[in-house]
Length: 202
Image (cartoon, rainbow, N blue to C red; front, side, top):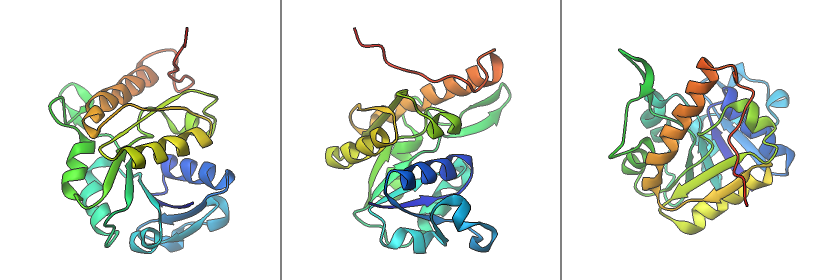
């Protein structure tokens, strides 16, 4: 499968390498392609539009304030699956917190920006270390197009996650707070980043 990763930071680069390891063709879209090493990333590097042109799935992995500009710079992505791996985080008087919720979500707002695409929320609820070695930890996906969501769920499962389709895109309102819980524990507890959420089946 041809996958575009928009953004090559910790999350984008980790996911891209994992996707390539299981046989996908990865193309990173970044602002300054000459600053990146394709061998190190395990995929091609170009502009957002170049990466997105032939992609079957586009994974959006940029800071939340850059989301709107990033998707606009991808060019015509009508009909494509766009995976929202971001979280609407910002600094507040009480520290880092969600800036959207609970009657809306970053995922739903992204769908409003690019209504011609199939937005799926996924890869936003854990740290990049767990993306490198999921070890059966959980990963949820949600989106308004069931086939697109199942495709992303299967992609998550292919790199080692216990992946579930939890319904339509409004379920992003559940996943983004779950991401905030992971971040809270990573920065305030003895767990640090060395933990992941999992589902125990009886």
